[in-house]
Length: 417
Picture 1: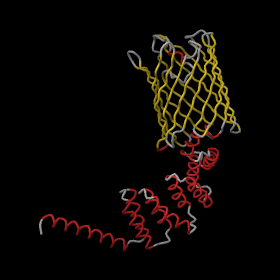
Picture 2: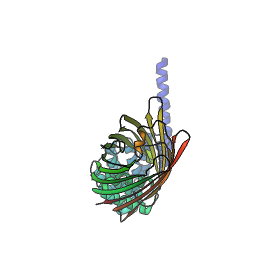
Picture 3: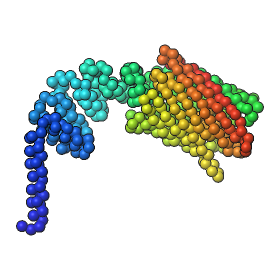
Picture 4: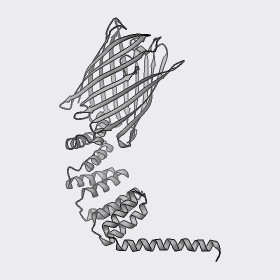
């Protein structure tokens, strides 16, 4: 016998011996012990085929052990074998299993396979077994969201938050669909900006807006009226938030004004948002302001939902001839009820294009050093009426060694219908 044959024989012998040892162990272990071994193989070693064999051995000992069958269906789902998983789940359904975990596993598999009508049927049946199952309810909200039943999804998410007000995933989903819940929204807001030294006159800005929710996202038309430097101006804006997939959506914006120095003549912007695992979200985009020359800014942000809180960090980078201007803002919101009821706190530096002070980008010979902090309070009355009050303090070094204390007070009202 040559060396190659000897090695092949040795490997075959060891494999056979290993299989016999495993078979011997499986023969002596209880179904619960086999179940535990299968879970270890699946979760710690990611060895799904071995886990399947262990579960099948356990089922021979305990064929009516529901948890084993449910786990087998999950294993086939994770192995991307939906047909095999479906066979297991259908057999359990024929037995009229009264187990919420079974309906969660079965419904999740159909949801991941984009069989949303079937997923909805399974989840609703599972909720007759346990109407307060948070896992089933969150899956139901996801299915309703995909089926564009945004009002139904909101009702389901509201129910989850009634049961558990600190449910992070429900909070994130509710905020994500709020623009699609109501088809129409009108709004009005007023800003008063006080300057201690930098400008002689205070600024006044009023805005009217109309939002239309659609199946592909929301669209907003806004008209802004301002009195700055003792002169009046008007600006028109159009914004859209199209949904691209379960993960991605966008912000698109454009604006025009013929009021030189009050508003930028043109403005535009775009951002791509991603809903990430563990209740994170991220954004990359740009903003453009056209005064006598174009000002280009690039933005990035990352957000995180945790129970009743939302944390966000954002930066704007504005390239110049000799340097890059930086703006950083941190935001924390504490949600008291739904998606429009919260108390917010902001802290940051620099000017951002979203502020009513955006025209300070124009003709500023000195790169202003700005510190800002503020509070934001939003609340609803009968869910259709949304009120907002925001106060922000700025400390601005608008000339070398010369600082100004500035205040921005904003109040707003929106009505959904």
